[in-house]
Image (cartoon, rainbow, N blue to C red; front, side, top):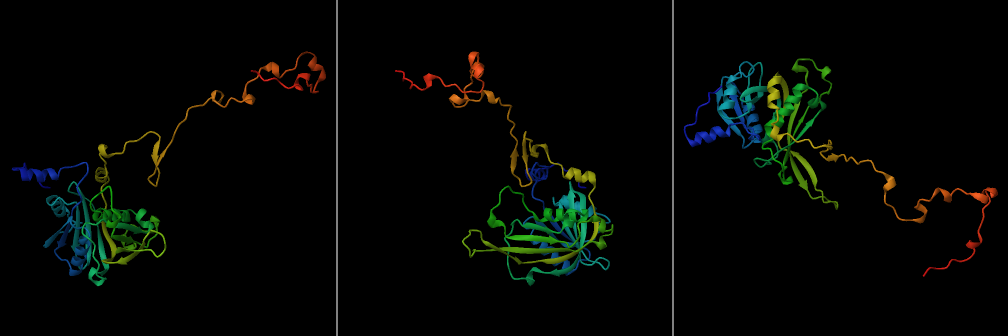
Length: 332
């Protein structure tokens, strides 16, 4: 680890302040590092993958005698020296040919890493010449239930999204969605099927497609969208894996109190992101409810319904008085 030095001028003080922890961290920077033996095939693949990380990537030209799974201190030094938490390390040997190691750090310490061995590779130059503007945010598509069940593939999904996501923004113009990164694995989501060795795990297919929109032939305003592969096309085989320490991962995933959403009483958010509220209404007395003043709704005295005196002798016979036949006089 590098020792902290007191800044001597305003420029070095600003640089030191930029590295201090923040509520909203800066965009994650990446490095591309070559091992002592690195084939041209791996160098081209790393350069093309790093092109989608521009402008937040830095390329090292010199060879480095580094073995990440034996001693990761050199990569931790590079991470702190260049303020970069993501590293792509390329190497090739007789035992492990054409290997790319993805390294991720937290607080300039190794968090997790894994190596992918290239099975097949097709460069961008072998596809139809199409370009993607620098700094565009990609869309991701992870196909296969194994990316949500197996811990190694969960790490791969998290690493790829961390590496290519770019700057975090709150709003996005639809015109900026120009390409999509698709990662697929033809495996079962049942973890018990796979043993502890990574050799039995399914291959990982990495593809990049560009979005092309055309005017729809129908009367709808929604355009017709097509995907065209632009490369690179790489099939990986998972190799060695270094999983993150539980305590260090807990620190890395901690959210500051200032950024934690405040709980609102009786307000929830469903799986679609819509707010759902619960309204509690007090007990209502319907007897005091104001209604129209109709004669049929008026309360009557009890004596009006119970016959008394000689009327009880007639039982159920209706009696009509003589006054009802005579018309009533209007009051003036």
